[in-house]
Image (tube, rainbow, N blue to C red; front, side):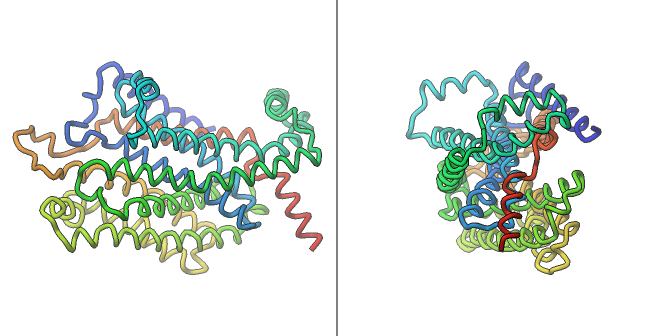
Length: 413
């Protein structure tokens, strides 16, 4: 109850800050002509990145017939759905005037990468929603039959969502086929969403954003933060709902190994991202890289590298580090480091354009978010956590029917 109250309080403060922004315009933010994106787009990229966890855990593992991931699929999908939903909302916030969204559908052009982003985000959201709903149907039948235990209000909701599900062999066959088709579709869509997001940056003429490495750099980072988010959620749900029997140390061991692999992969692309520009050291990129390595943003940059990749690797590479508590700490480091990494992708680059800043106010040369920006950003993060919290309290966070079937198959063997 306290946790929910804290999240609601953050959301209310964020909603009030957004009301002030609507009333007074984007002048309440610290964004100016150069840093025209700021913390809002950092949050957008973070949400888009962490949403990739749905395609990793649900689609890739399911198609690869990885049985141990079954208890984690619903956790991954609800993270994906809530994250991509708030990614869409934060874009509307960044627009300043939300009514302009209508123009995108009326006057949108396929030549624009922004249009590609809208299409692929919408597609990914609905596929993720279906991947969350279809495996939930057999569980709804179990929940409907338990109405005496769960109460009338929840029973009505379950009946509304799943009364058509009778659990026949034909329905089960169609459901499995639909889930498999969605798993196949969502993988290229997931790659597209992160590639298109990287194109949005790459088509903007700025130092550091025109790298041919950018698409793979975004995708590898998204896989890492998504896996880190699952580690955190696994530990929290395991503790809060006493799920030690279903989310075991084996799951932390397996996910820990995956996070190490993904962290090494993302570290490799980070080296690629900075090594080549540093080797060439063109004038505009020199200022950008100096600001990251030794300048104004150096503390954040090295924190993001160490906390988001290197320290988690050193924790999780050892077997003891893949126990629940150290794995949880490593997951938090990955997620926090990933958020700051997205901030660093956006802000320092905008402050170092190819054409030098001349005859502009001093405030244009620096950026630190206003309290309204912080409130809206924190409110959106709290909103995503609130959606996950409400879902976990209304629906089973562990797939009941799939777990029963898996245990039955294991017992027969």
